[in-house]
Length: 153
Image 1: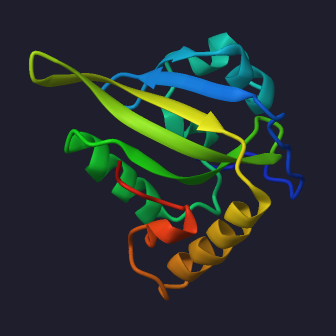
Image 2 (image 1 turned 180 degrees about the vertical axis):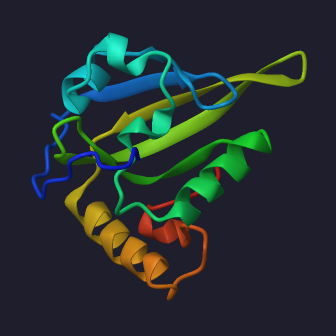
């Protein structure tokens, strides 16, 4: 998340069936976003394309979660987890995220992410786990997969 960006306590929910899709280059710079991404985030296409994906990172998200995501996809494996994102106006939204590397000739050329609306119990479990992670009371990864928070696919 960028420093000094607004944060509110208002949650915005994805509509049932709404799917956020984005692509980044290997450095995490956004190269593609779909209409649902624009709609939920409050940013325009011009404000998102060319920016680091962490533009939408919410400050409540533990750094360890993103370290795990990057370590996983940079190892050439898909990652799944619960992510809290920040809208342009400071509101937030939760997503069940699936990120995967795309390779050509053995080299990662981009990352693709598909995000959908999570179930309320997944959000509750993620909030509790993230709080423990921020307080140093949980392991640095988003395990256990049984909670539906993180699983390598």
